Length: 192
Ligand SMILES: [Zn+2]
Image (cartoon, rainbow, N blue to C red; front, side, top):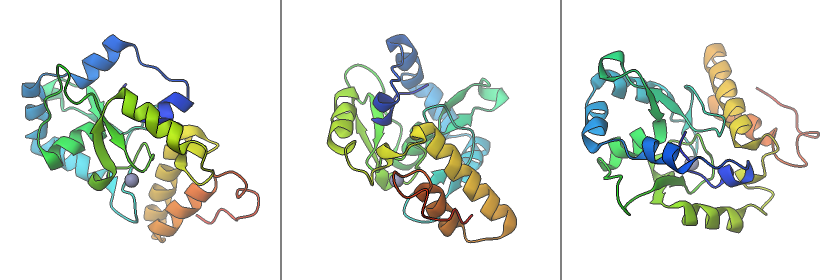
């Protein structure tokens, strides 16, 4: 589990320091093996839905709404936070040690968003500041009644269903988002 978003504060989620350190501070050499693995890269790309303003994860999700990506058996059979993997694919391998980058935050507050322009390196303090600044906004993803995990799962389900049925994926995503926002769920039809 990787604490990477301000929504974790809303959910009351606080990873144990050792757990967080283990997840974030994989040796750089280990990350490089993952980043260089063609199968893992392909698995990553196949799970990112690049439709609309935010690119949502359609693979496995943690309770906090963050994507999980499986490491191939030949490299150790574990799972890693998919946005950490994606960030490093796009921007280069991070040195996750010492007082350097502690986590990757989402500017857009969508835990399962994988659009590189929505990611920004930061630390727990910056993450908490994000939450204080944006949590009062009724239109913010932080106000989703389903919580960050429920929101991510609903969006994933909408994408997969729309893809399977050949319907408009962007529209399905918008409907899934609207369904969780305060005050609109009773008046807008959920048109998936
Ligand atoms: Zn985003």
